[in-house]
Amino acid sequence: MRPRVILIEDDTELRESLLEYLELAELTVAGVASAIEFYQLLNSCTFDIAIVDIGLPDQSGYELAQYLRDKTTMGIIILTARSSTKDRIQGYKAGADLYFVKPVDCVEMVAAIHNLLDRLSRQQNRHHRQQATEWLMDKANWSLTTPNGLSVNLTGKEMTFLELLTIQSGEIVPRELLMNSLNYDQEQYDNRALDALVLRLRKKIETVNSHDDPIKTVHAVGYCFSAPVRTEQMSLSTEKPLP
Image 1 (cartoon, rainbow, N blue to C red):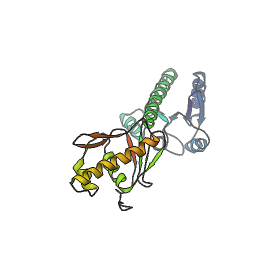
Image 2: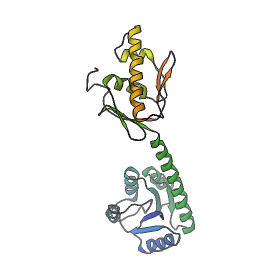
Image 3: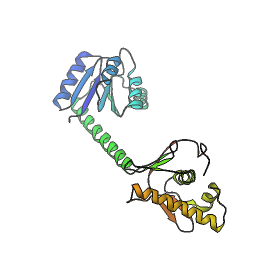
Image 4: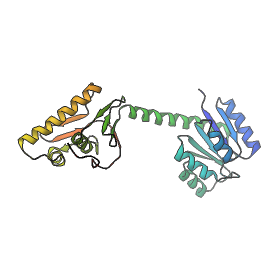
């Protein structure tokens, strides 16, 4: 599929000539003369790169670039006659990946677009790989979801135990802290109760994710959660009493 580029430029002659060149460079392109036309088109089309003029008739290109940075994953190229350092800095602060001053060399513009597309593609691939190995702690529904999307329902103590382990995955949480947080005494019986809780939780995880147990034991020290984890936030186990 050819990369899709949208050009927001109110100078008709410049817009048409640049669109023609980008088409010849095997890019799928669309052009609009104002911000409102762009927003209307965005309701029905998706794009990989937006080329934005600053001096639009209905909205500053800086504001449009800020919107794109906040609401989309598009690459943003500012194309403007404004060449001062102050303007460039404002453009980058608004979210621009690249800043070009008119008149633009079309060969350089095409090279920059392909370079930006490659960089965005690598970033997306890294994000997808991370998501593929990421666990999810859902505090609202009291569940732990595996990277392959299967969920484990948790008891109150299991939830508290995992909350402590996933505050920062990979960090060792001492047994003493876990015992105190779970209202266990430092007695042999309650020490065994902690180990039993961990064993039950591991068995639950193994029923849906037999090849990977993220709960690791650090002998005589404590436990850690060894995998990347994301948390759906809710206050720390205050909604339900521990069983």
